[in-house]
Length: 188
Image (cartoon, rainbow, N blue to C red; front, top):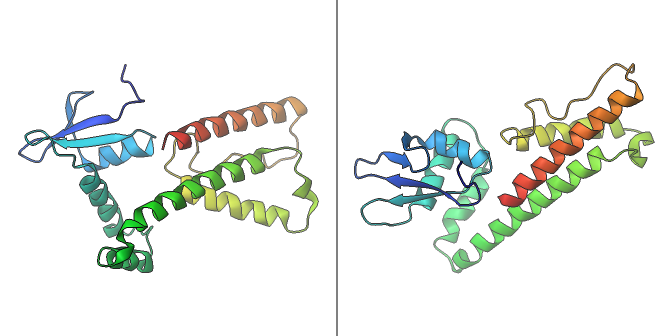
């Protein structure tokens, strides 16, 4: 069984083909993106020179998704990134971006925790249900490709006929999914 704590080593051959050293087969950029979405760290190295090419390939994955219309990075952010390479801000930007993504992950975890905590004192607040649906839609969009988070977000029974045991089982399942999600987020 593969050690998922170590980065998955992908070797690039002179022919530019990418070789997964764990499964002994060739992979595509989309396969690598899938490993990353599943919470796996990846390291891509040139077989001949030993150079680490991970950054180059990750940028290529982002560029391909952007070109397919999966726009995650606004034009203003891309423009600022280009500017940062030609200014004194170059050394600050990577740290700022890393800290921003750390804060986003922490915020998502806390939001999920708050959404799953029962009873929630905000439930009686006017407009709470609409706000909860907006939060779920946002989380579905942001975490759609993450394991443990279904394509339709956390499931909620619409009819009011659930008994206490079914609600308890649903709550346990949600807590389990949340714990799995938090574990995977902490590995990122």
